[in-house]
Length: 214
Image (cartoon, rainbow, N blue to C red; front, top):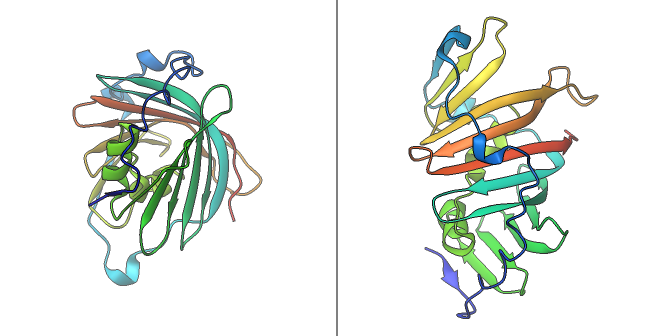
């Protein structure tokens, strides 16, 4: 359960100026992978404790767009992920800070542009309450790298070249629109991904402009 430190309304003004869509075509994100593109669907059960491999460390810069029935938001982000913690910074299209989200073994913290702090154990519930949309951080640290989380059951769709098309996990559908080759990985890493949640009422698009994997 999240704890509110400052009871003032923090959302007023945060989204002003944020309705400029940086990601061209955000409102026309394809909602399904064409059935004839899928050659193989692979099912994964939750891994045992010994098999639960942590996500690789990374540091990325990119752009983000969120759309649901009530709001649209676009901007940029910086995400540093390590085994013990995460730090995500969200910015408006004009480069103004929207929120800082940090996670460690004890809790999740969200600091707004007005320096108001909120704490919780569940990052999805916290971001939905404060920002108005869910950030699936537990799964996204894997999905952003083209991996499924070992914590829960998952499905993967592959094309005829065994290229990843879609991951379905924890109520989320993650569609991989493009990949990029980097010097940090022998395999291409996701460049452009689209996430859908709960009958696609919430849509998130992420474009990674700069990859660094440790």
